[in-house]
Structure formats: C-alpha cells, structure tokens
Length: 103
Image (cartoon, rainbow, N blue to C red):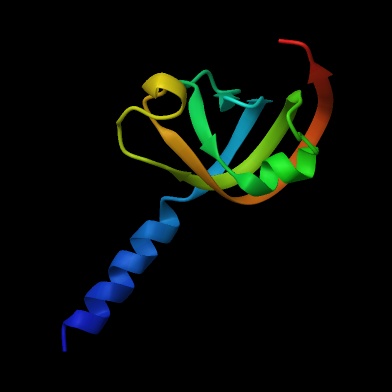
C-alpha cells in the first residue's frame, strides 16, 4: 500500500525539478548549447523541437530563448563531452532575436 503514495511523491519531486531557463542559444550541426543569462555554466541542450522551430537545417543559428526543462546530473555531454550538464527541454516559452551566423 505504500508503493502508490511513494510513486506520487517521487513524481511530484521530478516535476518540481523542472524550471525555466533563459539565455543565448547556439545551434549548429555539432552543438546545441544554452548560455544562461544568470551567468551559470553553459548547458548542452536536448531539444529537437527547438531546432525545428528555428528552422536550423544544417545552418548555424543564435537566438535568445526561454525554455522549460530539467538539467541532468554531472557528466560529460555533447561534442567531446565538453559540457557538464544537459538540459532536456519540455516546453518552449519564448524565442526572439533569431539570427543566422557563420561561426
């Protein structure tokens, strides 16, 4: 009988770990990275829907974004394991200042 309440409590904890992240998003064929506006460490981003919304089909794009999601535990993520954490996006809140780049 304790199993169901425990599962509900854990499910609530997982949902509460989700939050809104804002910052400069960079996407190219090798990288998908968010530099948080609060000065936190850069995050590898896992979000096919964000790339699709930006129309980045092989292009390099930068944009200001606000997204909801969860950050992983420490590890080695993205290209060559260069990032300590990965942000899994669950919702796109806002996208602005989209620009194509050559870098």
